Amino acid sequence: MITYLYWAFFIALAFGLVFLFGARLNAWKAAGVGAALVLFFGWAAYFFYFQQLFVKRYGGVMAIRVPAGQYHIAATWKDDNLWIENYDPRTNECIFAEYSKGNLLEGRVTLKNCNPLTRMETLTGSAAATQ
Image (tube, rainbow, N blue to C red):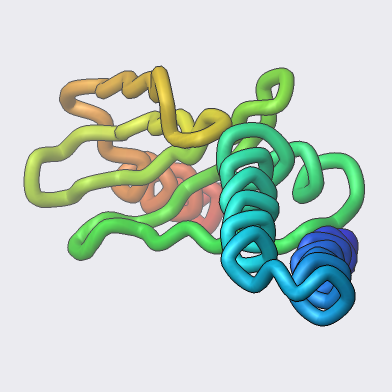
């Protein structure tokens, strides 16, 4: 919800500039440039700063896709950065991928010979055998 309010604010501000400069002052070029600048700075601020902050603290909107052929295991927050753990059965690796603000300085940790699916089968199989 907060994401929609954020964009509604910047779109209203851009239309307000068009109305003020274009309709009132008859400066359509300045109105177009001003509206474009407002929308650009709104996008840049959202993408590089506010997106993860809104999602973590205020219930914003964010979509992340699991790469083809991988299985999602877990997700956690470290400060304002989101860490996703996926398992790749083709290479038998667990991959921790960081989604930082603006997708800059993203970390990636790969655990070799990590097979959580076999471990889960072993745990559930041994639990069934003891009952």
